[in-house]
Amino acid sequence: MHPPTKFSLRNADGQEMQFPPQGPVLLALVKEDCETCNLTLPLLEAVHRATDDGLDVWVAVQKSDDIPILKDRHDLTMPLLDDDALDLSYETDIDTVPTLFLYDEAQNCTLQTFGFDKHEWREIASESMALAGRPDGDTAIDWDALPVQRPGCGARNYEPGVYERLQAIKSGDLLSRLVDLAAKDDIHEFMYEQGYTDGFPVVPPTRERVWQMLQGTSRDPQEEVAIMPPNLAPITVEKIAINAVMAGAKPEYMPSIITLVEIACTETFNIHGVLATTMGATPVGIFNGPIRDRIGMNYLHGALGSGNRANAAIGRALRLCARNVGGSLPGGTDRATQGGPHRLTMNFAENEDANPWDSLAVERGFAPTDDVATLMAMSGGPATIADERSRDGRGIAGTLAMSMSCMQDPKSPMVDTLVVLSPDHAGIFGRSGWSKDDVRECIMEETSVPLKDRLRSEDAGCGLPPEIVERFGGEAALDMPIAKFRDKSNIILVVAGSAAAKFSTILGGWATGVYSTPTSSKIGV
Amino acid sequence: MVTQILDPTDERVPIKRSLTPRPEALHGTVALLDISKPRGDVFLDRLEQLLHERAPGVKTRRFMKPTVAKPAPEPIKQAILEECDFVIEALAD
Image 1 (cartoon, rainbow over the protein chains, first blue to last red):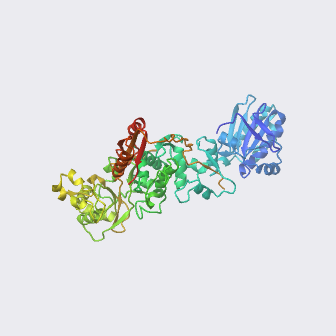
Image 2: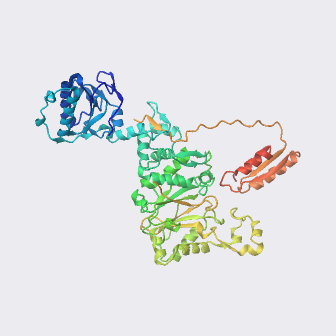
């Protein structure tokens, strides 16, 4: 707490009172529903009456409505100041009432205390009388009748909700424009009308909520995190926090959300293209490391779906940042032909315990103890691959390969995929002694078909143009095997979900490594 | 009741730009920009042929973005600006 040096508050009669007054002053801050405040107010009144005009006794009350109550209850004549706005309490940063400050003639704070400690209060009362030039005994306080000690009560400025409101308004952390609502506006309808939402309701980003959200990161609210395409708008930590509130995030998700924004805005990830493409791609976030449990991410039942706040809100926050700050709007620079529900949010954690191999993060050069986010651009929504019969790696790899052979269209090569293996399928690979590369190589081989089968035909217009044959060396190349995937590294394997059944998931990429490169980063603060 | 919220947008006021005055007639050089989408070249080939037939005095210059996934690189935009009087861009498929 900091003894105030200057302030102005109204008294019970509505008159403005400037602090400090001339001469010595005893200043107290109290609230009505505090037993210790009620114990001590008669003592302050006794000092006030005994010191007469030799010393001012001012009492700041933390709620307007309590002033007449306290005045009547204790028959008070000393000035009661209205600190209902808690300006003085905030500046003084008191956390307990009553709090007491004694100032000498030169306005130096010489003594202070909080709660009730008889020894300290007696010392302050004596010193007050001395400063007023009055005999100590004139207060007529029966100190022997008072308890030795009573704890104070929590100050109103530290009550839940009040503290956040004061911080939001007074800390100077928040510089975003305040949008005023008319009295009859429905907040949710208003936010839809302003175009702030992704189609679902959002949590209104009040100053209190945004300030609370900022407590989840140690980064400066005004720090510019990235330049967000497509409008190339600077995005600050504060703007991320606003959109994180709207997405339904908790403060502890902030470092993850900031990291995803940073990754998305890199040249390699190219969020501009990901969100603008007519193919309808979207960033998919995958998390590794202890943070998964620390913030309660789901990597078990239904990991890729609904029902988990962290999974849903982190991915949604990134999308809302791109929409509201980046200006990516469907039909505007977002040219997705159809899109898909995964474009609302697609974010999950890897089930590292069920992974027989290195996790995605370890595979990409991080330590198992690192908290890592990886972002990859996927244009195809999750498609379930069922294989409940295979009992060895070869069987599952074959099922995956056959399922993948029609990705995008049946003929196109050069595609890429994210494979989310269920623990059951991953476990079979592990027990069969298959490495990740074994799986990839099998898929490459099993999805390879002769070049002639990848050419456009009368029956299907998809596939490669016939003239491409020349580039492969002419007719002799027609039987050359061409894999579905550009390279085995374009088959990304992770493990998620529960040990419920033998179902895995594939997602189609978006020219991975060409248009957008999967990018990983340690999660910051 | 919520009476105030913080603005989630970038808060920037869009810069107002007026269109360059439209010329009365086609003249000089027309840039034909292929954004690397399938069949963009087919469209531009036909357009170039029609331009040469119907506006014989008009020259054409072909440009191509290196990737469909990113905005046109600055040198391409600069070359079109400095060397051409018109630009036709073949968008999407």
